[in-house]
Amino acid sequence: MASPGPRRSETGCTITFVANYRVVLRHSEEGYSVSCPGLPGCWSQGETEEEALANIQVAIREYVEAAEELARGD
Image 1 (cartoon, rainbow, N blue to C red):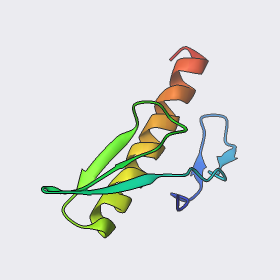
Image 2 (spheres, rainbow, N blue to C red):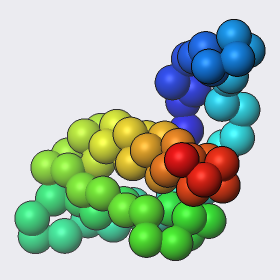
Image 3 (tube, rainbow, N blue to C red):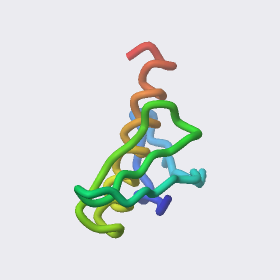
Image 4 (cartoon, rainbow, N blue to C red):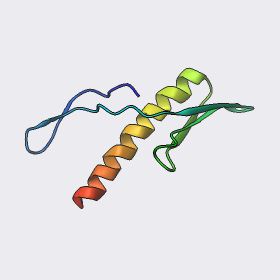
């Protein structure tokens, strides 16, 4: 996963994504589906490989952000 770039937290700290996740890309009649086995339920799709891979990057980022919010109790 490409890093979405640094972001600043409420405390003024800079948070940067450093994790990489393996994804599985599958061709279908509708285009491509892509999932991230390390993050259950995290999947996306696209008409092309490039679109599907770009979409899964967004899905992974949002998945991790939601998990962080749940862990903080937001």
